[in-house]
Image 1: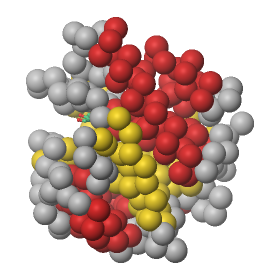
Image 2: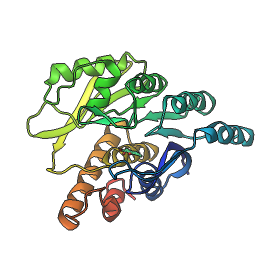
Image 3: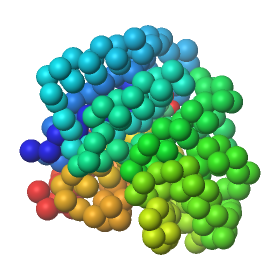
Image 4: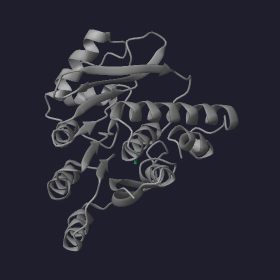
Length: 278
Ligand code: PXL
């Protein structure tokens, strides 16, 4: 059985980060260890969540795991609470991220042209330094712009998006850079990427639904990692992740229209498993 570790926060109520990664990856047949970076009462869409930073636990947990000789097929990082945590996660990559371990970074920190309120202006630079140590990164358009110092143009054309991918690749990511929630096609959304070694562009567009929810980025990333761990190619995995995210949004809009804080991904796990042949 493949075994991965995910490094992100626990938001106790609201479904995002670890409370999405664990059920999705377990359903996909992947053993998932967690390195929690903070405990919040809810995710930050709710007003005034409590937050206990767990930064002081990252080094001792890593040291214990190192003593036990643990290893992982992938390290998947999401929302990290501070530049200090990012420095510790880079060290974790040095220790546990050798050959044969996929380093997958979702630089969750911003959306809609704005940094999440918890972060200061220097944070994207720290996140860019983690992306430099990754194999695959999956920023949204806002995160890609912030990490590369590029103006945020939500309706940017193909030339703009390709140039942004080139700037992301220049951060140093080894295998591929991917931007989520973008397409040059009008009225749709999609995924665009670039292979780092060859400079080859790839991408696809898919349906854009009228509502957006917290946690869908985490759902996309967890599913993409899970599909890769199930032997799918990177591009097929991104497609599976996009399709499952769309299915989860549609499910929520149709059957739980009052819900605002996250998506009912649990109800469409059977679809996901069929999609990956389980
Ligand atoms: O979905 C990303 C995420 C993760 N963790 C926390 C968040 C968010 C998005 O806002 O608030 C605590």
